[in-house]
Length: 249
Image 1: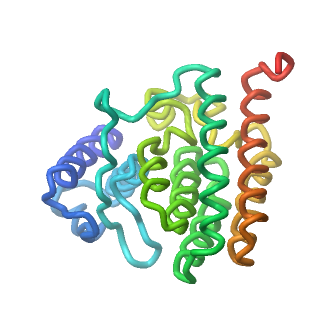
Image 2 (image 1 turned 45 degrees about the vertical axis):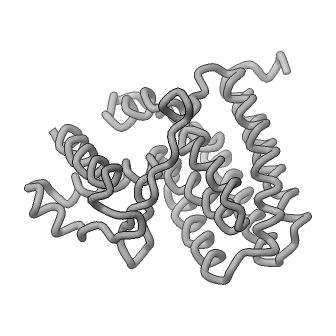
Image 3 (image 1 turned 90 degrees about the horizontal axis):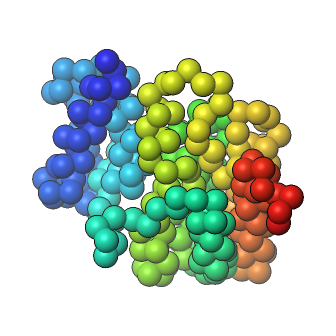
């Protein structure tokens, strides 16, 4: 029942953001207010806001609230590109290597103290989301998006927005099944290679993000690009291992 209520609230808020009723940069009503207005629990509101974060329509700032983002531009076919096969996923990692290594290098020289603090907050949130794949995906994508934002190049940021959170997770259909609580012992979505089979992999993912952050903090473009490349190359290796295709590569 909560999932149905959450989905209804997502559709309502999504429509208001896309239609411009809630303008980009505008703060959404508070969690208690949304709960009262829509006659749902605060848990339902939190689930809805989390989904909007995943879709790139909302950005939640710790201690401040949730703000509407400019809806990502649609692709020519009416939606973001979707990776439907292992080959697509591997190609997507290659694309991200070309895009995000350069974004990290630029961000090292251009990031502001506020952007560095926002990245640290996201890393802390990611580190505490082990065992919650959908939440981990949200924080993982937000971290990468913040790096692109710190690069100060709108075309790099738009490229990431066009990909959306699916660049981190499995396609939306699997996310829906995972969020619906099918009772499976292992989630169908795996943020950047982490899974519920072992905390070691998740810890490695967090440490890779931390290396990127440390390079940005040191304002070292070469180290930042290298750290991002190590992270994405490791993601590719984990993807192959988890798919059982590593022997063929």
